[in-house]
Image 1 (spheres, rainbow, N blue to C red):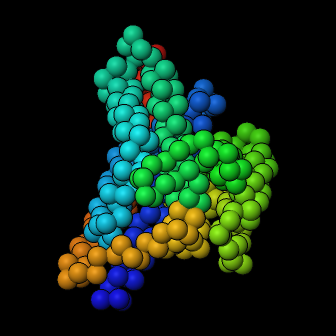
Image 2 (cartoon, one colour):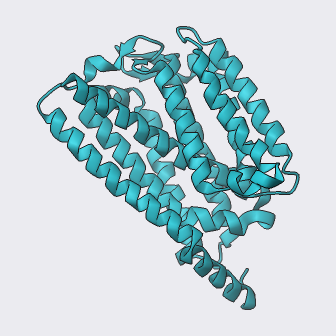
Length: 328
């Protein structure tokens, strides 16, 4: 049973790492559309129009897997963050509605497509901030009262390492957005911005209480800065901007960081292993998780094949038709 639980935990970590890597592409899209809509809006939209559904699927897969792995832990987390979760759900619905209206319903009506995408961008960035606040507070435990199942933002933001991790992460994704969406004007900025975010993050983690800065944590730092560096080298430019390359590198980086503090949550006050079910159902859930990973993984493979093939060509043809009609 112990081996099953450890294997289940490993797969849960993989699911979270991939989920975070995928959803980070939307965070980057939000900043790209807000700052560079006129120049790079088309190539950003070509990616996010179908990916937003896969992001939601991966999120559901992760939550269901956590519920099966540690059924006693999820209610505590849900009650602790209930105000943020409610806000997240409202904004998530707004985000979905804005992109649907932009592409299929109100497109070029009394609300312009550009306005709808700016709404999508702003809401997506707020969603990203909420997720970062939740994840960082789970690591540091600042503002958390486990006994009262409550979360206070004032002590959380009063703790400078929390602010640094959130700010550093936002800056990192801003820098990587130049690479992921191939915004090649002043592309050298991708290195400077990403490096600045990494420095802020590293310093913030170093000052965390009850956190050991293991030597292997240098790996995510090297992998992350490697992306914009390769992007600025002519011979590796195509590799760096490859979507699958980014998903792989970011997934590995997140998994390594996650492993450095898990299973000690909320600043080391909670051992997640104490909430593992350890029941006979664990074996069945282990097998079901494998099937879910295969299914969702197949969806991702299909998506990327379509993106790099017929789907991308079809969107280009649609854009060309709209340009001829004077819509774009």
